[in-house]
Image (cartoon, rainbow, N blue to C red; front, top):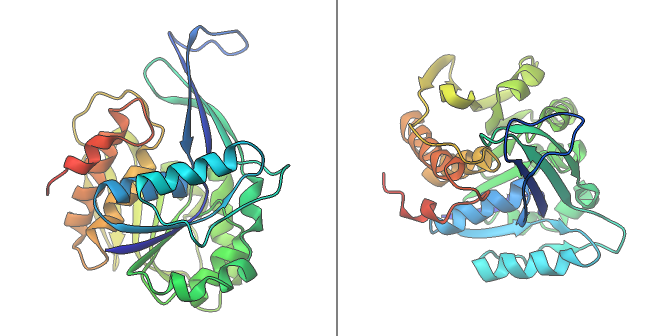
Length: 285
């Protein structure tokens, strides 16, 4: 399947405490640097599952932007419609995890993606609409998300990213004339932020509820799927893998099939210390 992913690509700096994290103190632990970003992680997972993936993003300026773009191409993503920003723009996510892999907190500096305006997307609209499926994350501005809702002719999946970024989806729907798209993926906290979306016409709503699993709403009916048994090493990237699996199943897949793909991919991700697990390429459903 041909999939276009529009969103963030950044440097991930992940610090995991060696014991129960003590706020206000220096905690011994492990610090890892890797390439990440919601959009990039989703694209990476999809490449591993064999999809033909185009990543559209603005890579941060300075030292890391060209390196991240090169790594994306080496993995197998197409980046011909992406660009590298001028120096002074950043794409970083710094996260702190407890010893059990659960997120204590994080800081995202994603100002490079603010350049992904409606005009920026309009220049790439033919390429966007040549895909079978389009995925966009809320790292891009609300006006850009609204543009996609109104102008994307393919099934559009949106990722809320975080509580702070979820408001962009609310604003995008408010700005949109069409107000309709195929799917929205969020976690329980993001869902609280988005629980009241007047006039929104969303065919499928996927809500990750952590250890409890996944809830899916479609046509007035709610489905509940338990999380798969796993040993959590890091929750970073779990939601990205979840949406990748859902999208890989395709818009024509049943709720049950898309949930199974999503949950299997999420399990692989959280069992790995990395945001993207190579084991995802071995999933068979």
